[in-house]
Length: 354
Ligand code: COI
Image (cartoon, rainbow, N blue to C red; front, side, top):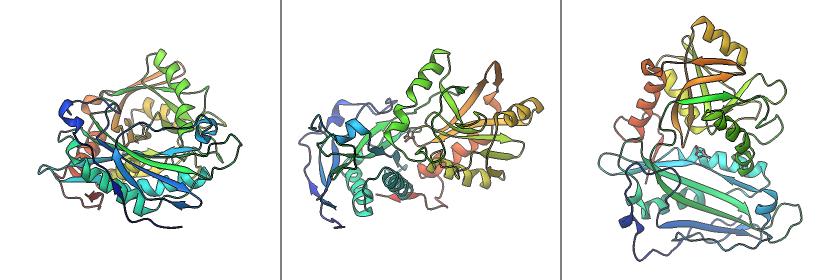
């Protein structure tokens, strides 16, 4: 594979930033001045281009629109108190992106494009990183098949892009979660571990039905017995039982290997908790709740960061929590934020300086 080092850069004449306030900005609605676009054709990546953010012109027969060969990532950039920008663990997202690419029969994106492209793009749009607590610049790398043909086969052509979106909090309040029994998200041997577009499209109906019942999101269960916890909406999920944080293991390939999940595991251990990555059944959760040992439940994700879960509903059984007095999830969030915003030293080498 040819590795491209040179980037073509075309800057905007006037920044849109003058028209936007970055305070409490909603997730995913506003985009920065520039984007990165790279084409893959005949087995090689072409010269990456950084150019003004603009619509793509696509043929109606575009393969991705028909058969869903499309993957993405979610990464975030932050500013420290002196205004220096850094990206949180982008190499881990790049590795996961390329695992998704392999699963979906797509080409691997080399570091020279994924990471260097992200770095250069953010450097150009660095003024868009909000300098405020719970705010960040959300980075969305994505790739889709771009053959203009409707035969069912892997494409010869692909497009890789990165767009940037300044954002405030994703889930502002503690959440109410519905344990999903009817629909399933992923099955062993499937592609639940991949950040493939279809995993999100396929989840919309279940979330819509849960929302109609007054819940924020669903907690997905395994596809065979509807008994073992998988993940929660757009987040991985942790249950603090006694002095142990339990989170579903990655070995069945049915959940996303979250970068925030991995960071939370590190910080929970730093707080002195035991962490178990294993199967966890809804019966065990209910027993712990009834015994008074289920202390906290929280979700982790790039967009969601650390989100507290104040209610879990399973069939007719409701588990409620007084999140006000929680210290574990809030402790993980506080420490992770302190590292991201450069207030505490980055002992784990998570920040990639721009
Ligand atoms: C993320 O946390 O980055 C995600 O991908 C969730 C999302 C689909 C908003």
